[in-house]
Image (cartoon, rainbow, N blue to C red; front, side, top):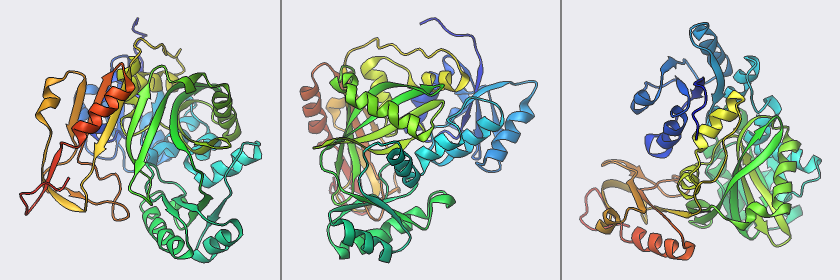
Length: 415
């Protein structure tokens, strides 16, 4: 691939090294990256051309920091893959005259209730749903709709706080849990819970990019969930030749959904349920997917989602061409109960196979708590790339079961 002319792209927030480093590496290969961060710069230092310390992640702070750099540094676009800061980044981009999702488009992603309303207004099939501010409203909705139902925070990501309920008692319990976890998110989305009709079927996600309102899908990830009645995401599969990428109905749904919420420019991660009566959008997110899904796509298809995010933000031609035709599978390792970690042991055979990637995600003394106490409490992951999907899944499952997790105060594995 021919390098493009170097421009400077701004990155707002960054995320953890083990989950987002590869995106920054991809971006800085083709762009100078200027980091806008509230925290101190750490591991990112070798990948950036400069940094601006923000007092807070607000549109005003970001805009002011960008304007202070002129005329010495010209920021050509802003990228954010942290769910918490995508609205502030999009609003700052619009105020600065840079390409963005648009004020309406980004809120159509961030606000799950608003997203449902916009999609429904556009004639897109939606599950029955209601935004409830207390358990009385939730019980009233359940009485008119019936069980099973799903409770979810209005503005959180990563399936945090999402749970299945089948009775009034469960609804009250899960509503209160969801309400509590919502307080950890953005202020605008606190103090309420979205209640929805439960849909059966498998779940996928699609990452794509939109330029000038025109949507292009990049890759499909097949999701595996666990920890019933919660929907913890425990693994994903990305296949470069997934037939869903050629499914006209799915692709048209995605295009229509982006038009419905008014999304203009940027990357989206759309989660979809393959229900018996057709495809139904679970939620839309104005960022690249988490859980290392873009990394799976990088390995399976030899593409660079981090670079594509920058190209989209800067208004450059997007370089999206698959150079590889493989399948990548990831599975996360969890403890069987809430623990304080002493050590995590990866099976030795992981080191002997170049197609296997493994990573310990915790340090000694870290606390891992399962839903509803905690979410995404992963000790490690196993990732494998190859040609045969079933063989890869079997190998990953076999290896993940061999990971040992030891808690402080015991010499027995609690995996």
